[in-house]
Amino acid sequence: MTSQLLVDGEERLAESPEFQARLAQLRREIEQRYAAELAEAGVFKGLYLRWKIAAEYHHQASRLYPSPESLYAVEKHDP
Image 1 (tube, rainbow, N blue to C red):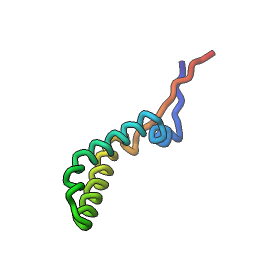
Image 2: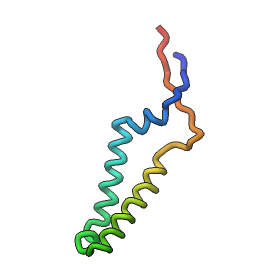
Image 3: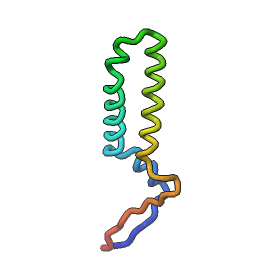
Image 4: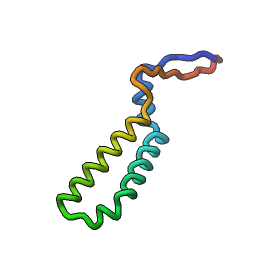
């Protein structure tokens, strides 16, 4: 078995169904946390809460990605 470095490893990770499912789960968790407050909010507070939700989502999602210096490899089975 040999390993081969991937040039597009980060893109493959970001597009994988498992990673997309984790991001969707993260968004649902954050939106549920603010749901009651958002339901009672007026226009301006609603905008502020949506901004706060987006900021928290981007912060938490960025923590799921590996560091920019990460290397990605795939193992190939030798015939």
